[in-house]
Length: 189
Image 1 (cartoon, rainbow, N blue to C red):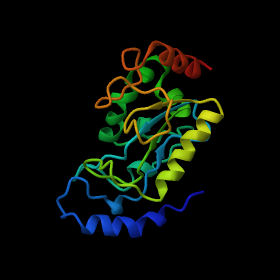
Image 2 (cartoon, rainbow, N blue to C red):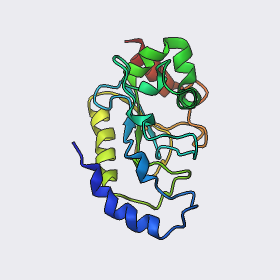
Image 3 (cartoon, one colour):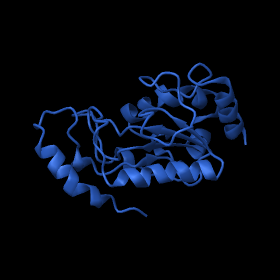
Image 4 (tube, rainbow, N blue to C red):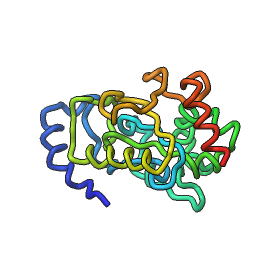
């Protein structure tokens, strides 16, 4: 298991160069949220930038929620409404077809940077990035459908990606036909 505290000294320097109101300032009080779902068993993995942060809405417990049988806990009916609603955008179609718990057990969102901010800084490279990329590679090796949703150039080359990087969705319209078929097959099992 990677020790995400290795990022902290780099974050301290990074944040010191930005003002407290910088949109890219990393919110260390939120803790690392390296993924939502189970990256070791997920059949579908969506590769993202970093967890979003909205002042007065985001809480340090958002990504540490646990519900038995719900690896992607943000889909659980008792998860905070704003947090649960965020997942409707990338996963809504899958939830409608397969059900929230089924999707929770088979889908993982993996973050390139595990630290929340209001806006992602693609120039920021923390020690944890190599570990995050290795989690994606491992998922590919075990046969998961791994799809790049954001930061297309930072993730391993050759992976399928969403059509709209500003609105990454796992839908028939959001993916090429071959990738969409693979997603449907992976979730049907």
